[in-house]
Image (cartoon, rainbow, N blue to C red; front, side, top):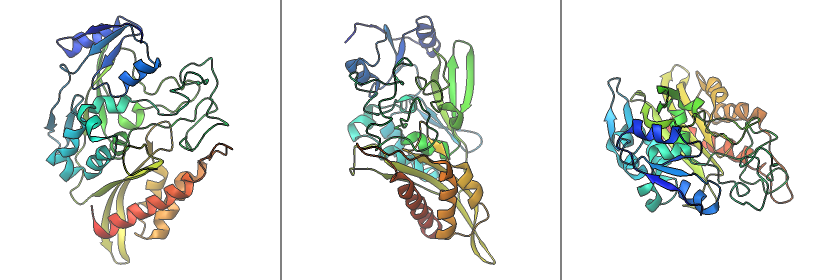
Length: 337
């Protein structure tokens, strides 16, 4: 491991300043992803700036009925919070679906958004990876593609974002509060993460030195039913093959139950949590039938590009996601949250 300096600032502004002045300095919170990358040599920062004392570990109520999640809130505390479980059950379910109990006790809410892909080529220095260096090629193209993207990928990168929590936040229209060298700003979660495009080395729109301070969730109607469903190779401690975060509002009409509003986001299918706006538009005003749910999922996946590979392709993700969307929405329509 490359030697590095370690700094514990007294304020968030001091932390931002400490990272901003060094081009390869990095923030350290729970360290559940970054420390692994230090050991593997994927990250070699000259300085680690510990932000565990300068980011809030509290969840507070907002005036509009929403909540603010401090960037330092541990994942286990977030999932256990009574307000989160009552108002945003899909978020609690998503957090509990990730990692293990021990890791959730260390991982922070801000750090969860910044974790990097678990593509095996990214973490293996013996293979080229465009995400590590733009001078290299993408080994996943033509390689082992089982866990790779079917939406929003490019010729430079087909990796997927690993977070469960971020998928739920995308469906909930969360906003990320940032403090940087140029002051404060707020970014909608759907604009926070990037698709790979020509530069897959950047996962988010954050500039160097910008620090996540909190995540805001808006109030949602009490009638909204929500759930998070994750499909994976093992029952625990495995990343999603696909996942679905769904929130549904249903009203009784003359022709039967009708979808009045819906929020959908997918995980395990793209370089970022995928907000399924096309499917949402198709569902609003529709009947709560399997046919309508399936058609909406198919509309969202019309541009999907499954990958074939002798080492293992990912074409199975398309029917798996359609079936999971259909099942999740059917349960919400009939049984509630």
